Picture 1 (cartoon, rainbow, N blue to C red):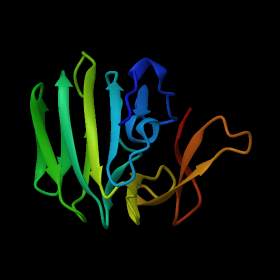
Picture 2: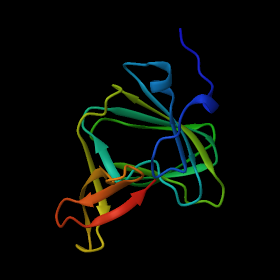
Picture 3: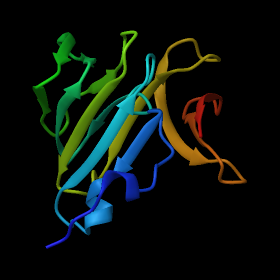
Length: 155
């Protein structure tokens, strides 16, 4: 058995103001559990994405998250959850003036191949991107696979 306090878990670089991996802190091997705090305008992920092999569930503890899906936007409020099967495209974001607090659960723990699409300022459309660390490792960037432009940077 393992226990951990959220305040003892390090924050990860992410598009969310605050992301903490509870599964890493607890030594979980088969389930990914992340705690998120999204300020207005923050997102859960680096872009519209899908995990080839991972099922994901988001449980909203506080606030309202909006998820972009292939079927359109879906709003998920406090005490509600949403599930994405492997291969389903999605991006959760906070479109409100209040913060969103949520848990994200994924199984298996390793997401495997993940496709991420972002709007590229140079290409003018949503393109596949890869995530890279800056040389000094103080931020993560999304780089357009088509033209090499940086589409976003998070520290």
